[in-house]
Length: 118
Image 1 (cartoon, rainbow, N blue to C red):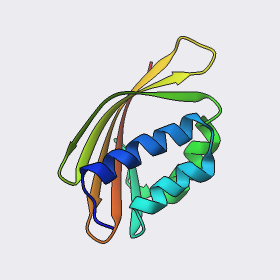
Image 2 (cartoon, rainbow, N blue to C red):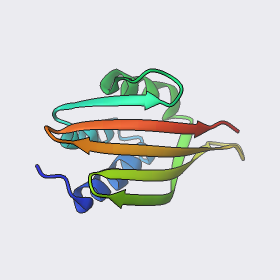
Image 3 (tube, rainbow, N blue to C red):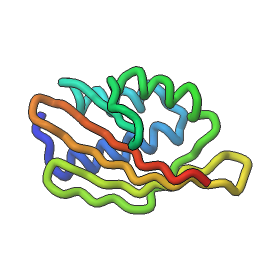
């Protein structure tokens, strides 16, 4: 599969929609489709890690608590930057994130999360 702006945009919208729908299988499938060669995730300030267990832990800890609103998305070449607003369900609390996605040759995806705590 070649990665272009349309594929990246589709992935970003799909993973967010599947998160908000509490569709774990659809959420993980979106990542598997664009990252068959591997996934790394870094919460900025911590070491980069194998992304699959990170996604599992994120889902388990946060999906029931957080809905995500897409604020902005910029795609340039094989990279994307997203500003998302993570709304804590049942509260007025929001957590702003800047998320960087880099799609490398061989189907590898590298994600970096910058998180502004409330």
